Image (cartoon, rainbow over all chains, first blue to last red; front, side):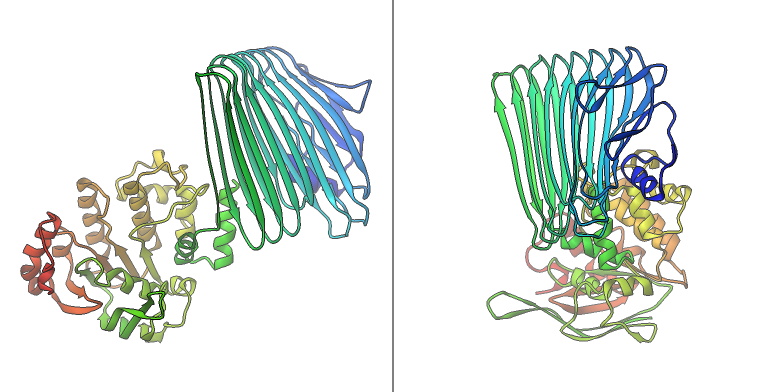
Length: 307
Length: 248
């Protein structure tokens, strides 16, 4: 399967793919499978009732990865996909998702990805999802991911969800349930600029005994962009949860940060911290005293913050 | 040669009046020497250092480095000219590691050299290289990393602002050793140590006493140290009233 230079660049941006990776892979291009390959331990099967795939990681699979990036290059194309991931018991895998849109036309392009993830008993999964948009024409680039994840007994899931530059409009929804001794960590990094709008809503239900959840949000809003971040932890059993949202606001941007804690059990320990502020002047001065210009200092601070 | 000529610095009180922070400061500092600037809190020591670094712009006067008037130069331009400053209270950075910042301080450094600078300030490199300069580090650790950055810059003008503050006694001894080795008699640069520490002061070639926004006294360590030694020790012990260093 051949990819154009634009497509290769998108794949690099959203999935760090410089070539076709080893192992299981599914690359979706403008609504169709451009490349699909299962491995001996990870099956990728097309859904029969709606667009999308089932990714089935066999129990006990360790040190393997599956790449399922999506790219859109046709202006005006609106893509909707349903993907299901079953991470088998006692496996340990990396899932690399992500979506890149190149819109060089005047019509709006949009990708709505609905992911259901089940991390089975004792399994470990690291999930990385990067979103990126590019193109100088009037056509907007919209990305609306919905992720529903179940972390079963003793399982561990770490999700890193990153929105890089160039996405005009996004609405992210993440719903999770964490069972006995399950552990979920969500790290969300978001950068908006221009007049972009972003909304992220995360709800985690701690349903099992001694389940834990941690949400770390780092966001930067520049220019006239706006962001709404809502994170809700619901402790339904003896459990621990923590939400940490840090945001840097620049220019005429707006940020609305709403951490919410709901304890439905007397042994649930839930905490949150939230901060919104400009880049501290003393940080800029410090880096300038090391020889950086003011703009280089700003870029360095933002790069580190969103690392 | 670094020269401060007739430096005045005013800060606004916010009610239309101004507070004079520095007044008629005149100092000439030579390469190859290790200077101590000492004096009571609020006397103008850190303000003086920030005027040299370009963080504060003087209301009047000139800063001259090797014959060039650098008064109007930015912080970045002064850093490029070879002025380096270790902050008294360095800021923290989420997401920037110790290695990141050391490489900003001196881009030519490789990891082996960075490890060496961290050892110089008493930090085990394996424990710190990948750590964020963020809330996870103590004030003393941040301070030592700050000093390591200054050492790494190898600048012709190096200003240490209270390197001993928040640092344990063993590390102070280590810092004294490294500053002596690096700067004493080094014709390529000068070091200015702002300090109240009774161990730092005697190792310097000259002591400059700054109080009430100006230079009250200056001389070789042999001349100045005996007269202020008791005051410094008394201040260290927190026993002094308003008459520190003989300043009314």
